[in-house]
Image (cartoon, rainbow, N blue to C red):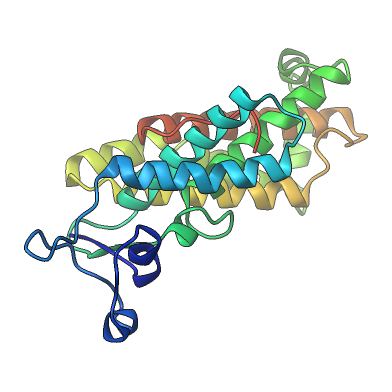
Length: 238
């Protein structure tokens, strides 16, 4: 069942009593005229997202800003509806859905955008994924990197990224999209930690930089594919 938070209900124009505002959620009711279409939610999310995009990228073209806002709005709504298990009451809230922190579509999209930015910077610096893969032919040095103090951190995110197909199969078998949504969030969270813990482009050790680049590429591909499976696009920027 999908319900609205009191704040979301008022933002959509419903008049609430003081008692209604104290409730944890407002149930939809055709008899009471309390109902909302998905298009109405997307329109409101898109308007809110556009304001954020305009504040972050004021120089971008209007069409580009509107397109990004639409991608964020759809991603926010889809993820919010899919992250809860089927027997859970979904209490929709605009502020929560559009948050860049926590388990949201925006957070997952932002993580993928951040991952893509690494490879734009890599290309600008004259590097490439192919060159990084070639450097990994130094097997012994690669082993040393994975065996070092932070090697477990690097290895663990590579393993998590490789489990996308497993997560999809589990979600399909259980008829529970929340399994894939949770996997996507965990991968996005793991990537952000990986990003903060390692200087990927600035790494001076050629082989270690190659390891970091290849693992980052594996992760961004898995994260993008997971989001795509959920029906969520990755914007060019956020």
